[in-house]
Image (tube, rainbow, N blue to C red; front, side, top):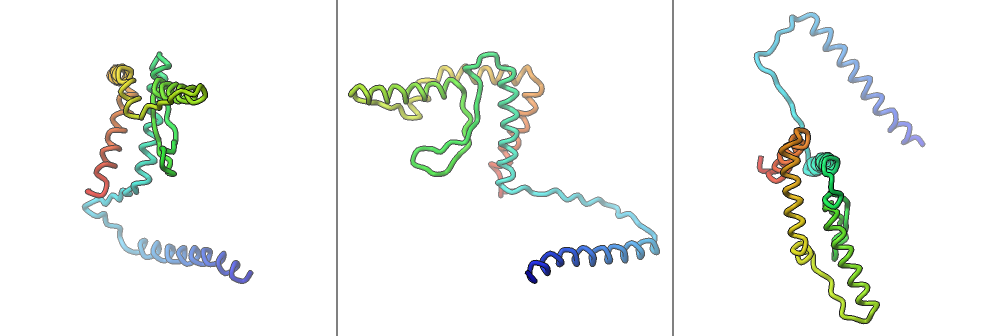
Length: 174
């Protein structure tokens, strides 16, 4: 109990002593004329890799939200989520279009049906599934390019997202 009281008083003591120092310096500043330095010092915080990734996720959410708002075809809407890849316990953020999510679900459903019917189940790998949906990905890229070219807000968010990803890529080499 005594330790808790001392710990809670120590920030208060620090605050009072810093106020006393601040008062002393302000009195000495009033006595001497204030001179402005010929240069200005700007301190900008360097974000950590984690903070930068968090900001990228937020900007990416803004981009996806704006894209989905402008995009009229729901099959090409993009959804971001945290997933745990096979053979891993570490969740990662993944943004995927609706058509790809549906193709993966159909693939898994076909696999389960084959198991139940006694057939030889065959589950497509991620790369094979991507190859099967390559035409849809080409259409998605065309839609992104078109909407980015025509919508100033989406273009601005895309630019910021690119700059942040570039900064993360070059993190530590600055």
